[in-house]
Image (cartoon, rainbow, N blue to C red; front, top):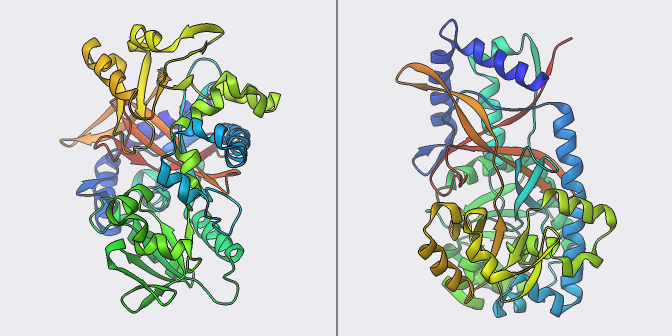
Length: 452
């Protein structure tokens, strides 16, 4: 296979002429220079990027687009019908904020899917849809630049064409397009990247700020606690904000300030444009995958969309006392969850970073039963276990090159809820692949072809 030929060639190059040592030294230097750290931990701990063949990348793009059409159908049905929307498990305060029209069309102009390539039916599984605060675009682009400059890549490029898959430009275009739809044609936006100053992803905000400024935009990184809203203007000190690139979670804004929080007041008054908007919460819920895969909702989707859902969405249901289908078999859901613990995962409906995820095969029957009881009191989904595949990745350990298998999480970036542009990759030796949770490595994703 062309992909494995490329991987083997890259690994063979690392094994000779001290390319591994020189590449590791340059990688370490570039990580420091570019601030590519999650908190105090280096983002990347391996010496090879993720490779896609052009056919693989086009396949992923096509399937993402089809799945996004299905998500859009579910969103439209949820907006039109509160009874249908109840399946998503929104809270009362989320329902209230949902009534606000953001002034632009897409509920999630910037988003990211979390997926795995697998060996069984369909070959691809979408596990989650991050429709609220998708991170990693600027990290991906900076890592791409870093890897293209490594000594091993100099040799690899003699044999292969390597094309990066950038994504931060997509964030820029989405922000500006939403601002224009919102009504900001009269003047250039004054942009704020909004999140708490202590979050471990702060270094990515710096990368985004530098990029936005390089494109001629005014931009500041702002902590919500620094904001004041008065006289119809949202300010951080003397800096007036008209466009928010929201990286803070809506839940956290409400928890810390209620509806009187300056951001929430300014957005609801139409004084500032915020991306992503309050309405992103519908599809961001883990229950959105349950809505797509539940047989009760089959009539919402076209035959092509139902085929894609069946192929690419793992069986997912809200945890509740009901009968449902499991691959054509009618089941009593709660006893089924107890009996099939080792084939199932429980996920809190609105958490991130691996929090609220319980892998049934890694806990005891007693712990699983206790988690199930909690799940009946708050929105939780149950999802079928997916058999993960792995790829070999090289790293330098105590000066020696080691190649070990790592599970690979594919994270395509999605814009306007419509198309994919760029892809982040996360690696781990553990079943729960999440940088926020404290494990694994992030690598850039390249398309690769042998030179003619």
